[in-house]
Structures are given as structure tokens and as C-alpha cells.
Length: 176
Figure 1 (tube, rainbow, N blue to C red):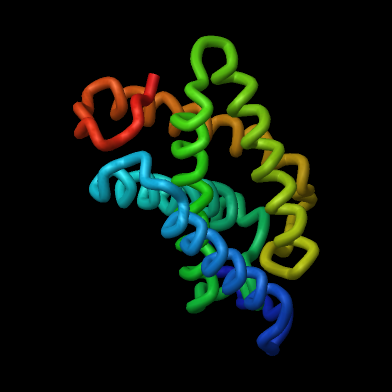
Figure 2: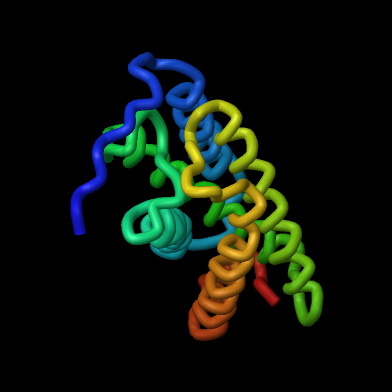
């Protein structure tokens, strides 16, 4: 397989970089200022799960053999590509935080996943408009929905398992 040539979309510090910076600052500030629902090790795990979900999603369909989109200014990996992965951390944490806060059970888990998949699509739409994502090979925005739905379903199953086997100290709220 031949390497694909580098595609450059722009050479300037502009809306895509600002979106990533704003998303990082707002997301991690929100985590910092929210009332604590999890011990620090679980909070860090949930952030890492969010980052990992973003990496898995992006590296499943944005690199060869699929190569359906590029991230940021070029098809070459750069600093802001890395930062865009880190920005998934707060989304993952908030996914778990709100599930715990709302005490979602039963069939409402499916509605929760659908709603978060819509939130992910909305966020991706803004990011694509600002130049974070550049779709290729006929890929269109709506094709991302099944990936979000799948990853969030697996992530929620993992979260429920973690919370089932974890004994939280009494200072943290009950989780189900």
C-alpha cells in the first residue's frame, strides 16, 4: 500500500485551533468546578475513557484503509490533532457524571445513549464547520452517528460494570 500524500487545508492559526482550545478550557474547567461525584482515581479513569474513545473512533475511520476524514490543518498528525483527542476527556467524564447524577436506569439508558449521540453529532457539526474535520471519499456528517451510538453503548456498559464492582466512600453520592 502506497503512503497517501499530505493534504494541507490551511496554514494559519484560526477557528479550528480556537475551537479546540475553548473546548479544552471549558471542559476541564467544568470538571474542576462541578461537585465531586467520584473519587479522583475514578474521575481520571473516566476522563481517560473519554480520550480513548475519541482516539479509537478517529483511528478507526480516519486513517487508511478507510481514510474518511482529516483532522485540523492537514492530513499529517500535528499538535492540535493530539489536543483534539484530549478534548474528548471532559465529554466522557460528563457522560458518566450526568448518568450518575440523573440516576438513569433500565430502558432510559437507551434514551440516554441516543441523546448523547445527538450531542456528539451537534459538537462534530460545529467542529466540522470550524475546520476541525475535513470529510473525504464521500463521507458525510450523518455517517458518524452509528459510531457514536456504538462507542457510547460500550462505554456505558463499561461504566455500569465499574460502578457495580466499585465500593465508593460514603462522602460520594449514591449511584444507582
